[in-house]
Image 1 (spheres, rainbow, N blue to C red):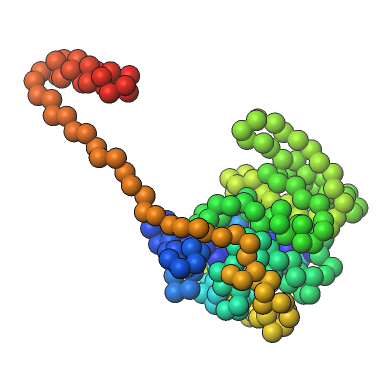
Image 2 (cartoon, rainbow, N blue to C red):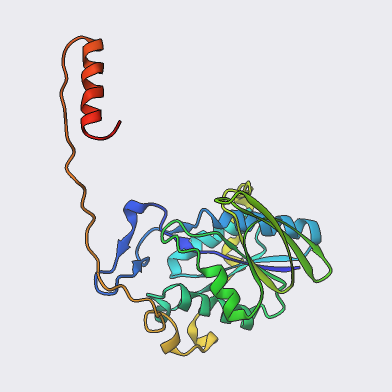
Length: 264
């Protein structure tokens, strides 16, 4: 099997997230990036399929050059090689434009793929759009919330779990296909330093010069999502009540105050 794992070099901490005030897009250039934590579930899922059925696992990401360390860590997990689509013309892309670049990169550099695997969502934007949108660009079936799969010929039999509904479902789709892996459903293997040390040799960097995509269809110009405005979050003032006296009296008074505030 030839399995492609779509990964994102994400901003690891919410406190480090920066938004461009003019475009309303996430700023990643110059910000420390790491492999999106939920993509590690997708990588582990893909590696298990490779270990069972043979083949190759290729990580694919669209990111600035600062996204290279994230791919190195995935190669350290066991990914065979990686492709980084990196070009300033891709900057400011929403999920639709990002999925367009990822799909076209797959069609150009991995046309004989069998399966595309994604994480459920990212920790810095949490849209959960990329899997479905990439499947749409590729014109192949898509199943989400997957936690297990088996292969029978060209058929992929997947199990998925709808957490809110508590429903376990089984789907059979013909490959090639795209799936997203239920977050927290896998136990990602450790990164091996022996593999990570030489990881840069297994990363191919491609720009739009090689991909040849219309600049009007990628990056900020190719993104239909528009951020109309931004405003800082406001928090209501906290009320403080100081109660003194014996513990029994303080507890009784505290219960009365909470009832008055509508908490109890």
